[in-house]
Length: 247
Ligand code: 13P
Image (cartoon, rainbow, N blue to C red; front, side, top):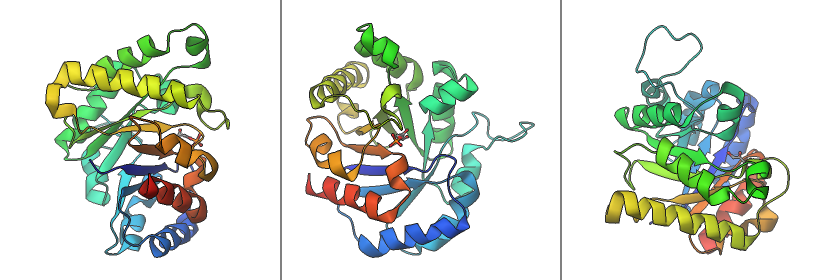
C-alpha cells in the first residue's frame, strides 16, 4: 500500500498560487508516497498543465452524481477527469454541513466518481457533540456504511476520517483516539468487503501540520493525511509529505 498525502485547498487559490505547486514539485520531484492536491475546480486544468511530467496527482473537491444535464453550477465527475483530475473528494463535512449532503447523496457521488474512472476520497467524522456523547465510533461506522458504495475497492476508494471539530481549529484527537477510530473503520471495511479492502487507504484529516504530522503518521492504521490549511503553502505541505515519506 502506498501512503497518500492529500491537500484540500477548499475555496482558496488563484492562478498566481500555482507557484506553490511548482515549488512543491521542485522540492519533492520523486516522492515515495502519493501526493495529491485538490484545488478549486477553476484551477484543475491549469494545475495539470503546471505539473508537467511530475508525479503530482490532482483531484476535485466535489462532484454531482449525474454525468451531465440541467444542474446549474454543478460539476460532473467526467468533467473533473476531462480537466486532468484522477481523484475527487466526496462527503467533506463542509459539503455535508453547507449543502445538507446526506450519506445517500455522498454514496451517489462516490459511484459517479467510479463511473468516471476517478478515485473517490470519502470523508466522514463526528461532531464535538457526538464525541462528547460517546457516539464517535457509532457515527463514523454509520457514515462509512451509508457513504461508501458496494463497488468500492482499494484501487478506487480512499476513506478520510476527519473529526468535524478538528478541522481548521488547531485541535486534534489524541493519538490513541485516532488509532481507535482507524481500527474500527478498518474492521468495518474488512467485514463488509473482505480481503479486497485490506489495501484501502485510511487517511486522517483535521489540523494536520508539519509540527504534528510525524506523530500522527506513526499511529497504527493511518495511511496518510487529508490536509486543509497547511496544504496551501509548498513549504508546509512539503514538510508533511516528507514526514509521510519517513513514516
Ligand atoms: P485543516 O487541515 O485546515 O484542519 O482542514 C482539514 C480538512 O478539512 C481537509 O479536508
